[in-house]
Length: 218
Image (tube, rainbow, N blue to C red; front, side, top):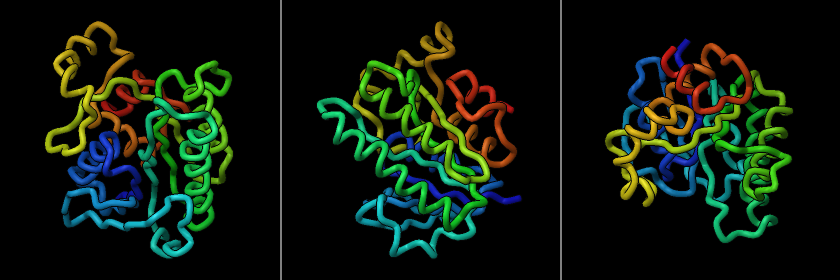
């Protein structure tokens, strides 16, 4: 069955890489990008829905019906943030979006980009908040839900939005993958793993780097 994907975060490095990967796959019929700003990409499969607040989809709920999966790639860095504000954006906004989608499109699979080291019991603020987010997403009535925990990610060709660190340290990626295969992957692998998980399932709901690389290859 052809996949129809809802995607968030297309103006960020992860979301853009996943977007370009999805658009390149013949099994993907359509991608609906939901964002506050245009992605900067045009493609026959791509439709963009601009909303002022991802936590409030009340005005566009009818546009979400009929999609097979959501790839939630939107997110921010916790650097310099207080826990309350980071929780509002990372946990509360994500759950508000996901609850709406679960209600209007319950047959969809939901894939959330978390991060390596995530744990609700962590002493690290970001990991603790993302861990709670993962747990709450897994409790929602989707057809399936998967939590992806990538680490260092290489962009795909044609990306416009690349994090500053990659411009300085990207040359290290091939060696990092050889020495520490559980620490790095490509955004193409992330996108392919999402499509495979949404289309045919994954071995477990939480996928670390090695898991998603294996899923992408399968």
